[in-house]
Length: 349
Ligand code: ATP
Image (cartoon, rainbow, N blue to C red; front, side):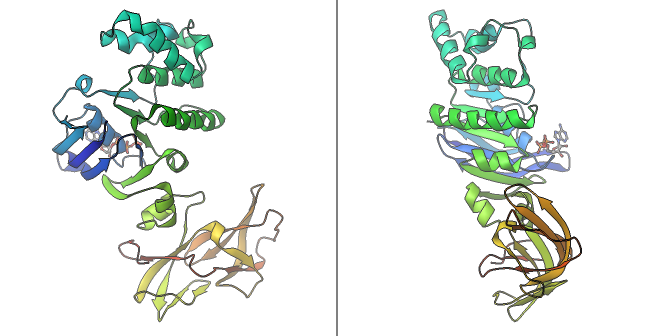
């Protein structure tokens, strides 16, 4: 059992706060992803759980032990980093076995455990090779096997896929998902890639400038972003966000008028997702503007127009075509819009 508790954990250097009051319970066997842009504090948070960084305040618990002051080696966590950190002079077999030697696991267990870990990441045929004779994806799998072989209570993974090319990233991502299902080990995974977060996580923590913005399942944060930062970070494309005024249930901004809304009056940001809106005839729909660009995606056509002080994208049918500059309407069906306070960015409805 390894639930993890971060009890009001803070990290600062002088006046600079890298992680601000991080408070969260992570369930046993949960796959938790820390997501955010560069510098938001996700790696620092993970390094504090690993014991590589001392918190300035708060407590960290793993299972029923407080580990805040423990050395990394006493925390029973295994880490996988972006740089694989393999020993170049050792074979794949020796690299995977290394943690067992360090931890003085009886020799008689090594062979079985290494073989099992290697099988899980499909490395069995490479066990005699040196890392230099492996591809990037294979090296990353050696690093994974070296973490798996320890059978730790917790896996910590820091951008493990970011050195791989796009295609390999997708297949290795699927492999990590499958592994986590089999191994059932509590995992904390750091990434700035929102697609990785959405595909892998049981829950996602979105961070910005050291502060947690939202914690939720991928569906929660996609369907109900807590603020404009989360709305604009999650999704490909991210949520469309338009500036305007809300008066008596009607939102008005550049090229846009949406009726039938509720909520307070004043300056607001109105959001909607590209796939929830529909392209309509010019003069119809809530948005009316000339086509700014049209992109063929294969399975859909993305139409972009300017409205509410921003470029907004709508997913149309794959055979939809329009000239750039031609007038077009965009219909926003009921209940697809999200309202945010224009000043604070917080969700209103
Ligand atoms: P990236 O994706 O770029 O790795 P991150 O979200 O993981 O970003 P962190 O590495 O956690 O970010 O860093 C958070 C903030 O803390 C950054 O602004 C960073 O510059 C700062 N920081 C990290 N280590 C130190 C340090 N030793 N002294 C001062 N500031 C630091």
